[in-house]
Length: 475
Image 1 (cartoon, rainbow, N blue to C red):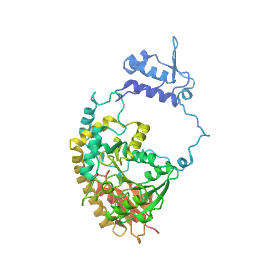
Image 2: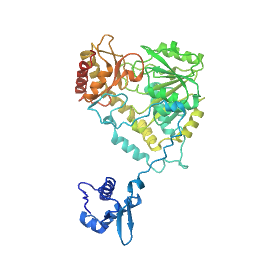
Image 3: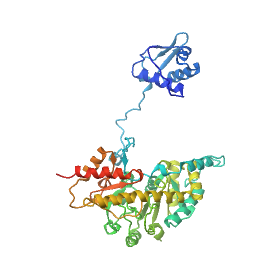
Image 4: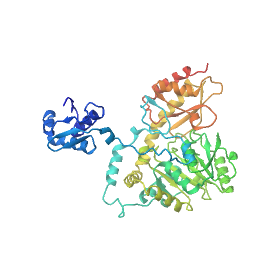
C-alpha cells in the first residue's frame, strides 16, 4: 500500500490509524476499490498489536469507508463519501415564523483570540478556583445525590436555592427565602421563563437604550412589541415609558452598558409607575457584586412592596459562563407558572453542578472568591481609568461607574475620531474592544472590559489601543 501512516507522539494508536486512513480515502490518496493490507501485515509494519489495526478497520467498515470480503481482503468502498457524508433534507419550503427570520443568527466564538481582549462581560478564568471546584463536583457525584425518580424539582436543588437566598440577602440586600428562588441555566434562561409566562403576541415590553441586545431580541422572538427607552445619568427615563407597557427590563445596579447606577429617586418613580400601570419590572443584576467604592443602592426588589419586581442574577460573571448557572427571585403569584415553564423547557438543570455550587456558597468560598477577584479587577479598572484620563482625555470621557467587569467611555463632542475606525484599527493591532453603538443609544464611545487582560499585560494592551486613535482621526 503506497500510503504512509505515522504514529509518532500518539498514544491512541487505533484512533490515529483510523483518522489517517479515513483522510486518505476522502482526499483520494487511497482510491476506490484499493485493497488494504491484512491487519496482521499492517500491524507488523507499524509495530503495533494486530488488535489495534483491527479496531481501526472495524470502525472504518462500520462507517462505510471500507468493505470486507471473506477470503479476498479489505477494500476501499466504491463511493465512500456518498455513503458517509449525510445531510438532512433542505426543507426549502419550510420556514420559521416572521419574527424569527428577522433575528440575527448567532455565531460561534471560534475566532482567533486577540493579543489583548477588552471585550465585555467575561470573567478571568485564571481566577476561578478550579481545584476547589473539582473537589466539590467529585463530592457531589455521590450515590445519594440523584432523587429516586431520576428527576428533580424544576426550581432546582433545595440546598442551592437556600444558599442563593442567603448569599444574595447578605451581598445584594435581596429579600428572599429558598422558596422564592428558581435556579436557571444562566440569566438568559431566566429572562426566557419570564417572557414565556408574561408575554403574549403584541404585549408591549420596554428595554433600555442603550441596553442589553439579547433581552430585546428574546422579547421580540416571543412576540412582544419592544419599545426602547432612553437612559440618562440617573438610569432609565421613567417619563419616557409608554402607557400600556406591561414589562420593563432594566439593569439598575450597573446599567448595561453605560455602568451608571439608577438613582434612588428614579427607582422609586419606576416602582410607582409600574403599580399605576399594572406593569412588571425585570431587574437584571448581572455583575454588581464586583464593587469598587460605595455600597450599592438597595435593589428594586428590596424596595418593592407590591410584588411587581422579578430579580434576575447570574454566576456567569462571578464564576464562569460555561457553568450555565443563574437564578430568578419571583413574587409568589408567578412562581407556580415559572416552575411549570421550567419543567416544560428542560425539567431541571445539572444537579451535580447545582450541588457543587451549594457547597461552594455554604463553605464561604463564593464570598472569598468574589473578594479576591474584586481586588484584582480593581487594579485593572484603575489602570484603564488612569490611561483614559491621562492619555485620551481629549478624546474620551469616562462614564462614572463603581461596579462590574467593564466601563464605558464616550467620545467628546469635538473629538475628530470615528469609533468604528478605532475599533477596526485596534483589531488590526491585535486588540479587541467594543463600540458603544453596538448596544444602541445615540452617543459614540467604547465599552472596555477588563476580565480577560491580566494586570501584568494591561499596560501594553492599553498602549496599543491608544496608538489606534491617531490612525482613526477623521480627515
